[in-house]
Each structure stands twice: as C-alpha cells, then as structure tokens.
Image (cartoon, rainbow, N blue to C red; front, side):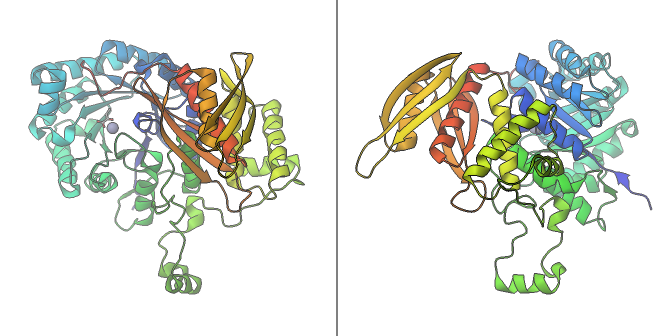
Length: 515
Ligand code: KIV
Ligand code: ZN
C-alpha cells in the first residue's frame, strides 16, 4: 500500500527566531534555508516580513535563492502585513502566505478585543487578500488548542471557502495532551464540510514537553503537515523538533500511514549549523542530535551493541548524519581535500574569493591545531560569514595580561566605522577586562545576560566557541566567536553581538498587538 506524504514545514527561521536572543541576520537565514533545502524540507517559513525591514529583506533573499522548497512569509490578518508578505515571497519559485488570527475566548476578549463575528470576518478578508498574491495560502486559528471546537469549525469552513489551502491548528501555549489534540484534529476534519479541500497541519509548542507527542498524535488522526523547528528551537520551551518528528515517523513505519521526503543524513549538520548561528547549544542527551544520542557508556550496553547493534539502537547514527569515518584534515591538506570535505558537509562557495578566504583561515587554524575536524570547518564558515557581513566594529588586536594574585588587564584596538581606537581596562579575569575595554571603546551600554564557552572538538588545542547574549532596551541578541584562544573567542563573540545590536532596531512580535 502506498504511503501518504507527510509535509514538513520548517519554522526555524520564524518561530525559532522568536526565542529571545536567537535573532538571525539575512545571510545567516539564507545559509540555514539552503541547508533546509538540501535536507528536502517541503516548506520553509523564512520570517515575518512586516516585523522590520531586515525581516522583509531576509524573507526576500531566501525566496530568491531557494528553488526546491516552498518559501513562506507570516502575516497577521492585516492588510499591511499581507501586502508585505506578498512582496517578500514574490521572487520564490513557489511561495506561500501564512496568515493567522486568534480564536480562543481569552485571546479574542483580552488581546484582540474583537467579537467572534468580527474575527471570522477579518480571517475571511485576510485569506481573500492573500489569494491575490498566491494561490498557496495557509490560515492558522491562533491558540486553537484552547478554542471552542464549534467556533473553529465555523471559521475554518469560512476560510476554506475563501481559498485557504492549508489549515494549521496551533497549540500556541503548549497546553494540549496527545490523545486530546489528536481527537481535536479528527473532529475538525470530520465536522468541517469542506475539510477535504484543505491540507490539515499542526503546530505545537513544548511548554509541557509534549510538542512532538501532540504532533504525532495529530498525524495518526489525519494531519498531513507538521510545523517544526531544528533542535526544537522556538518561543518559550520551543516548537516540536523536526528531527524527532521525522525520525519517529521514519523509524516507526509500522505505525504511521505516511512518511516524509526528508534526507535524514542531513539532520546533524543542519542541527549544528542552527546551534552555531543562534548560540543555542544542544543538550548532550537531546534525542537524535545530542552528542550522547548514540553513545553507549555502560559496559552492558557497549557489549550488546558490539554483538548486535539492534540490542540497544533503534536507529543508525549514520542515517541521521553522525559520520562514522570523519576525515580529519591538517596543515598538509591541500585545497582539493579541503573543498571536497566542505562539499560533503554541504558547504559550497559562491565564488573563488570566498573559497580562498575560508581556505586561508583553514591554513591559519591548521598551523595552531594539528587536526581539523568537521566541527572546526563549520565554525570557520560561520566565522567568515560573521566577519564579512557589514560589521561596524572589528577586532584589530588584543593584548591581555593575567597573573595569579594580580588584576587582569586588557589592551584592545578596535576598528569602529573605519577608524582605529585603542583602550585599556582592568577586570576580574581576562574576559572581564576585555569586555570592559570593548565597552569603553563602543559605549553601547548593553547588559550581558549570558556567557558560555564550549570546546568545539576534543583536546586542549580545541577551538573554544563562545556565545554571549546581550540586551539593550529590551532587544536581545546572541553573539558567537571561535578561536583556539578563548579570550580572543570571547572578544569576537562580544563584538559580534554588539554589531547585531548596532544593526538592528526593535522588531514587531507577530503575536503581540491587535489586528
Ligand atoms: O504558535 C502559534 O500560534 C504561531 C502562529 C503564528 C501559527 O506561531
Ligand atoms: Zn508558534
């Protein structure tokens, strides 16, 4: 019996980006979108174009480069949002507008201050407007998980009649329980007279840790699109994790009447790319993509796996992209070996200059470090991308002095808007001294919310990957930097965050505000 296709709608670049501090630049979004396309994601929700000019440009840039996945822009049920989303997705081979409006009593009364009749009317108008830009229109009744099913039937029948081709049921606040959420999907599909004219989709948040379970329960009851994110990134506790949904369905084909088109061997590299760009590290015990997901520590387990892998493993590590024989490069590796490995990691260069630039950085790193692992190569590309994006502030040089019993001192030279400036500062340790020197030179007044160092690979010569999160006037951004010297990596990450603060102004949040 042939299986149904389960559509994977990835919203890492939109809902994922709504995690405080996970905001991404246009170029970062394009890099992730390319990786999602290679992974064969069906639909990429690239952003919320009305939020800011930067968001609009990012969705447009993704629409321009992505050829094999549909590119989607989010819009509230407002004319101005829909026009902006329609403009942004115009260059796409295949574009979708996703419009939404809240339907739960609590949202209609307190957030929208609209009556149910007004909500139906606005939803229908929004779908009608969106259809002027594309015949691929998705409608979401926000907070459907706490909405009255009778009202959902009414509004969804009306928007399908108006031409909505996908109906997405969000559990916006992560309140639902699997059997109940599955039953809701079944009930809606059975009771809405024109439900066969639309694809039913689900979008679950993870506040109770049930986002994946709720999504899978809905799939068993007939939903054929799941909205999810890489590493489960997303608002608050996050969204359903793409890798968990995809691997559950693929591994349990005895249970599911459908399968996805996803090339699962791309999962780990995509997860690392998203973690690197957003600075949201993956916990070691995270299913599928955590560093320990396929590690067998206990002697009994190791013995079992060596005798027969199936004793303790239900999936093969290489099927999700954990490479078994990862090639290690070193300072004698030539351009060809470098390029081949990069291409195996799905990192392609848009020009010879870009290749030369990253290759030169590879050589510098190989001089400091004997063995270069895949993780180092990925960090090199992130690093190059960070530095080539119009940066107002650049690190020129750093001199740090630290000694037992003495106050650390940092002397820092930065290039700010083309002009070199130098400052000295002391601090409680070299990193503190360094950040104070940067602050002296830039005077941004940001507040540091998070500082974390992670060794990219094994060994004391490993590159340290530093993530900082800073806040300015309620706007939160992450910065990253990598280097074999963790003080330099720290300076790079702080500068990277400050550049983002300088570049971006506050953005509109899609789920705040009225229609
Ligand atoms: O969680 C939610 O309800 C959303 C909507 C915009 C679909 O993200
Ligand atoms: Zn959401």
